Length: 501
Ligand code: SF4
Ligand code: SF4
Ligand code: SF4
Image 1 (cartoon, rainbow, N blue to C red):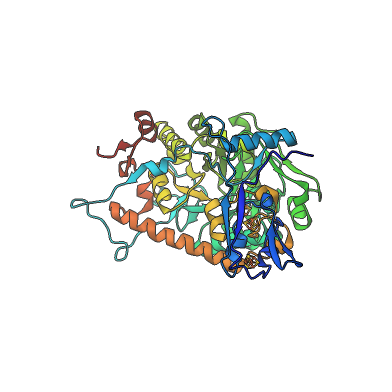
Image 2 (cartoon, protein in one colour; image 1 turned 60 degrees about the vertical axis):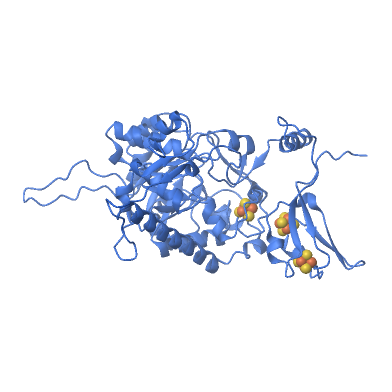
């Protein structure tokens, strides 16, 4: 008899006093956990298939369901946790690399939670955002070092191309293929309504979404999927993806099973064959090579679009960013190690890279020290969870932030971290038509607009509390931050004082 080493992580607890055997849970679960036994007129389940996505819990009309952590435990061992043992068993069985999705869930410090924001008292009065104008608009792109005038004294317009955003937030790259058509439509419509941008990721741009071009960042990744002149010219900005916080140092992989129909056409990649982006760009081995690509893309778009270079937050990120700022790029996007992904090897996601807070502070300081801070704007990403994180990121030096997991949560994601399986019960990280239909873009885009409208109000309130009426004057203003429970080195890297100082 085969021995089953692996126990289910979760158990489906059904209250039979409440269950009316309506079978809604059976219909809603794409993992086929629930089953109706007609003979017994009873629902049963196979817990081992449950990924804890809460779809059935949310749709059970009698609130009969609960997903609980499995009661099965191994003998206590601080060194060998149950999770570690289970992962080892899984690999002993499969011989394969462990895969995960969404962001790093491990217990590393979250620096945003150890940073506190200032407020004005008595002197330097606070500003009431309900009565005074508060400016959250930001412009991303290189700024000239000095104002130049022509022979008549008029200011010369020598401003490189800029992105104008109503608030310092953009939706980060999520490719069509990793997320569904309806998720993309929700993001694109919300970006247009909010006056911000969303990002194609490396999957190309579906023909239906060219109409949102003014609110789109088109990405060029190492696989060059879906990249052609019309694509480059359709967006408001072009992003060269050099790295991603969830998987620094490795490429991307979209399984052939997801390369079907429109996705295959949009990516310009054959149906059913895996779309593998190599780890490096095969034409970039130096800042000079990067410069070649930056200028090729500018040339291809008539020097009208800002070019973003996106990198993962890694050990020498400040030096790398300094090189990028000299490459001709207009904007640097830094993605911290908690950033999400549709699929990544678990060991890479959980053990490679550094937190965005430290990376951002280090990059901002280095560029200021070198006198080139205004040559580029900085976008910070990698688990921005709330308006407070945005305010702290801006004060640490960001011009703007990228959000992705937060946006997916607004669309209904329950962070089950199973996107790589392609059976997202919430219609987000899936291409299965009957699942995609579960996300109504009409509702999805409104929820995104609501979320960011609420965050914009909160940002204004925090700015008012600090006595600041323009978000641009908060950029890099670390005097507005204090650390709590951080050591000297951490405070030094963040460039902030300890609370009480
Ligand atoms: S959805 Fe709720 S009531 Fe309906 S069968 Fe499932 S557990 Fe029972
Ligand atoms: S996978 Fe999701 S829908 Fe299926 S049983 Fe588990 S929580 Fe319910
Ligand atoms: S997008 Fe879907 S599959 Fe991915 S974590 Fe969220 S709910 Fe789970």
